[in-house]
Length: 116
Length: 159
Image 1: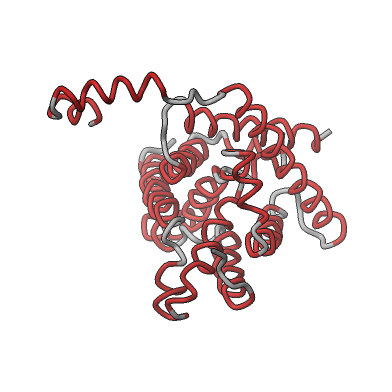
Image 2 (image 1 turned 120 degrees about the vertical axis):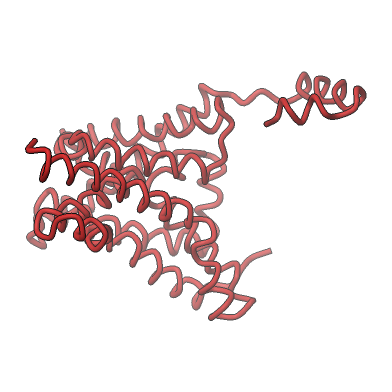
């Protein structure tokens, strides 16, 4: 069942993105930035974890999850070290996305040649 | 901003702009949304399959499986981007391929490949976050503000 909800919730988040593209005429960079901030706000309100429990990858694959993880990392550290933890902990949980993007970006640049 | 520009431009330019607006091809919103829904949903569906594999075979929990799933999806994206397949998916799916984390991966990897001709240090290293930079910058900044407010409320406000 979680496969079905992953599809539906993930698809719905993409439809919201498409509406921002087409109706509000925002470019992809601005749209994705809005999505990340939205994810961070949703997690600040405590709404993102229930969504992941409900939809699995449908909530953890869209870029909104990036904002969610940033807040998560900051809050984890903040519980131990207070305000300082907010600064030091931000990348704690998000590591996977950014490091994977850098690592595979460089490997991709070594393997592939630009086209056109 | 667009309105301001319009008022300052000469009348012929204004007339041209209204004319151009009439001739502008209307974006097929419903069709685009359906495409975005199907491809976006499909990518998340594949993500769910990958994360299920991590949960059952590599002892991750439902919550922690997100990170390796994201890394795996970006790994797959590397090949799709390198062979030029992701661009084609992107033309078809619009936001359906941009919003999932694969779109983030694609923007980083394509920037890396594109700037390779300028050298690995300043070309690849300097431009790798050209497109994905705003997402990281404002993601981090907003997360900082939100976590700060939340910490102050919980630790000093007694919530």
